[in-house]
Length: 307
Image (cartoon, rainbow, N blue to C red; front, side, top):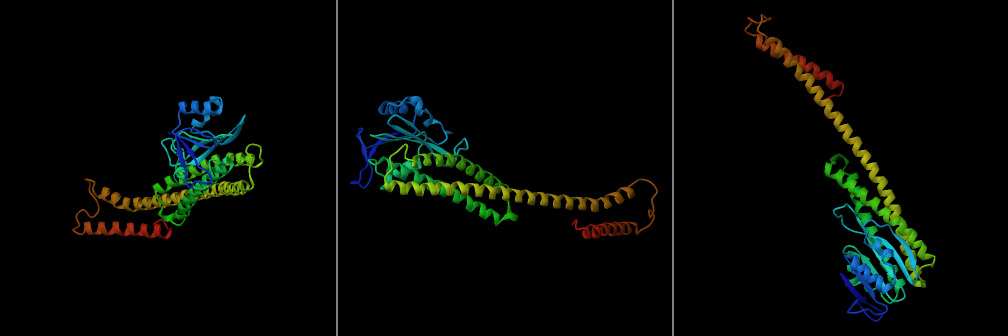
């Protein structure tokens, strides 16, 4: 899907245009090779310079090619079939246009199109800073959701189930992917802050500082959360091992106790002359002896805390 949008300081919301004009935003979602050819034509970029925009695993970075600044970033998304929890988003800025390219539909972009009142397409640096700030907040929100899940599971260690372990592993994978996306994004933002790529105004510098702080905090929170998950996973392993040992110990004790009636019953079941064979009280005596011996073993095992 390709759409051309425009918003200046006089407008309250994004206006959709039928053709290109200076200061517009060209948004392409679900991009394909034909879309890249279109972008190449209006920006004079070689198509191989922007082919990475379609790579679902592309890492964030910033490049310059003539009048064009190309920023490859990543945003949060729901899990897809490949287990990818972040999606690439490419921003191209030049003296005429702002261009966004995403290989999939982007919730962040849709929210800006439908209600991004603070986004001005005529102010490219301000637009970019606001977009990056929204993306950093998306990461912060995702990290908070995982942290709340981890804290909840910490309070219910004794009630852990297999599904809890799966959620924990999934949370760790999400955080690792966030770190892989945020770390190079931080480097790209530091490059922007130096002013070598995009001219920044005083207001833009404030937004850039807020965003840089948010991304550093997100990386730190991700790292801390991953450590918490690893500690929690170790605790689960210790609990599972202890529960398994207790179960094996209990089963062993029951096996010992129940083996006694089996042995006695086997001996007196042989078709040969046996003690008490002619006694009318033999059965009661044998059952009582089995009970006393089994009870004795129970007392011994109980004192050893096996039962």
